[in-house]
Image 1 (cartoon, rainbow, N blue to C red):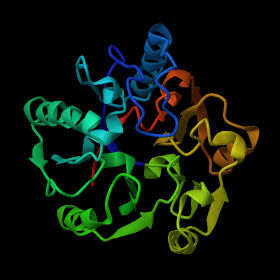
Image 2: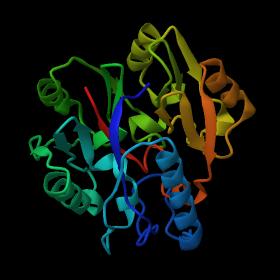
Image 3: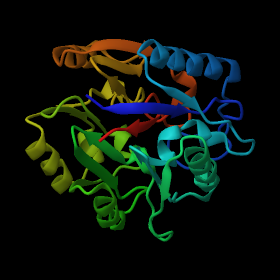
Length: 270
């Protein structure tokens, strides 16, 4: 279970596919703004129904990927660790998110060296006090010692080798201390071995579920929030772990390379 104090989201007012910085993005694909808004509101409704404190960061014209809130940084207790994005198109998002965290949520803002890429919660997952860090596509391995010091914790680092799985949350979904779903081909051999050593049940993500970002879920208590369209095979995995499945349509957000987890900036509690 993920212990979460609150979640921050950003509405899709200016969401579009304005550039191509991952293999899922195609500028000739149009975002249906009305549908994107409906999908966003449906996710917000789920969070409210689960009594999760919810904050909304105002969208900014010219920052179409701001809807992918997980990538602004990493938040735990009263600390906001700013992301350093590899792609210049996304760097300004962090300024707005950090200002919101500081001024509205009264969080302490900390930064890594500006020369080291770190893309926030998309590449840094937490499960029961254990941290998993993805590097190699966007984030850099050099960020690990800085993050370990800030978080006062050892981190399991995992090398991502497949451009289609550019963030860790597009390749790994942790269900419990011993079970996770994983895109095997997204990881180097040594990193896959680390995962197999960590999880006694490392379930390969069914091929059907890759374009639905089947690892990109959020867990609140015994509820797992996932993209609508995932396979029955994957649903059985979730149910076998004791989760009640809540499906949300995310078709518009899939166009930009993200789903439920990408749309949600979690503020963890330690």
